[in-house]
Amino acid sequence: MTVQIPFDNSYARLPDRFFTAQPPTPVAAPGLITVNRPLAAELGITLPNDDTGIAAIFAGNTLPDGATPLAQVYAGHQFGGWAPQLGDGRAVLLGEVVDRAGQRRDIQLKGAGPTPYSRMGDGRAWLGPVLREYIISEAMCALGIPTTRALAAVTTGEPVLREAAMPGAIVTRVAASHIRVGTFQYFAARRDVEALQALSAHAIARHYPDADGPLGLLQAVIAAQARLVAKWMGVGFIHGVMNTDNMSIAGETIDYGPCAFMDAYHSEKVFSSIDQFGRYAFGNQPNVAVWNLAQLATALLPLMPERDSAIEIFTHEINTFPDLFDLEWHRVLRAKLGLARVEEADVALAFDLLTLMEQAQADFTRYFRGLSGADPAQTAAEFTDPGPFNTWLLRWQTRLDRETRSPAERQSAMEAVNPAFIPRNHRVEEVIKASLSGDYDPFFKLVDILKRPFEDQPENRAYQAAPAPEETVTRTFCGT
Ligand code: AMP
Ligand code: MG
Image 1 (tube, rainbow, N blue to C red):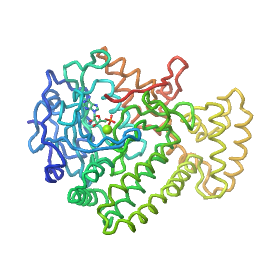
Image 2: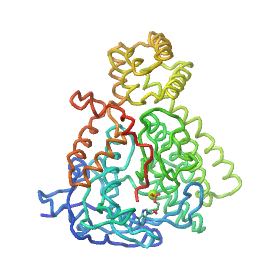
Image 3: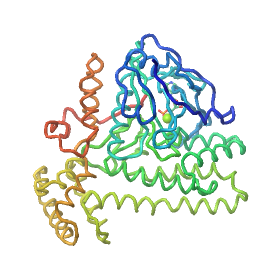
Image 4: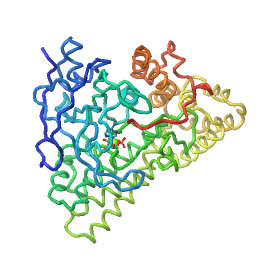
């Protein structure tokens, strides 16, 4: 028996100019690192007990029955600069399945070889970014944040030339779809209204069946992005490359490149080595989201009957983003502080804490987790000058007195939103380093811990710790 995937490929039925038919390029020696069995089950995929057969499928050496492999075309603004044609340069969409919950999901091999959209690239990925994407996307899912998933990771047995020769690998990505803001931009830039219409109808049917036309679609995407970015910020996540080609119409986190979780809180934190001016800094993510959404609105304009009035209507919609985002962000912050009631001064209480944390370089995850525990006062012990934190703590406790939930209820609600474990950069680096000498134990261990990020796991306390100064990762690199 081989891997069986119940494909139903709707994107492949769209007009030819949406993609190029492109099979994955076989690799020298597929080796299975891991396959995500619970996810496979969710997708209705049958996996035999045969690692070689599984590796052959997820390396692209064997094409599963029913696959219609293709590379999608799109465009995008990269760091604000217009790139009229991008596309899957190293990814091949095998096809789609309708999962157990009735949701359509893409199955894509990332690192599967060159395509017509590879430009100067080799179409491949190396082991480091593949493990990073696996760990972080699965952790995001466990943290309750909309995200693409990782179904499998394999090695290719081929070197990939980066600064040095690195081991090649492929990650199988599962997504609600791979339709990006840049997919709309691609057709809009070509004044291909017919294609825009087909794309918009496809996206609506797939993601927002209640949306009424292009305006409804725009509204739905705006709302989804406001929710998503607020959720990112609630766990200290920095996407790192929020180019319009890396923003999913479905509202999922997509394209894990130089992304990172903050250790010490700073509103202007940047990790990506190529983000010189902090365009994609932690606190700038809502601003970039609105900029990207404005590009989506522009791309949708040709679908509206009358341009001038459409510009007015769409501008109004884009301008709803800041308030929508604030609503979501304040909701996240209130939950982090255990506040079920809504009071006007809550936001100031939260922002004052963030300011203190920024000044003291407090560890974002540890602080909020500590606050959720039985003895929040001990959080102050983390700081050389605990005074301001103790003062803030008193304010918070006074505010808690006006809550109606019992302290135990409040505590467990806080523990359900303030994770004990995040994929800390130094741990991810440690995993990659070990993998380069063939040791995947740290990878499996980290993936396992991050399946239950809200549980205390006393045996894994070391993974809660912030990095020691010499372990601190200050720069992350693109997934290439
Ligand atoms: P990113 O912003 O990292 O998602 O990628 C931007 C564009 O570069 C996309 O069109 C990718 O498909 C393409 N790309 C990235 N890495 C490679 C590679 N190694 N080979 C070919 N294309 C690539
Ligand atoms: Mg991308």
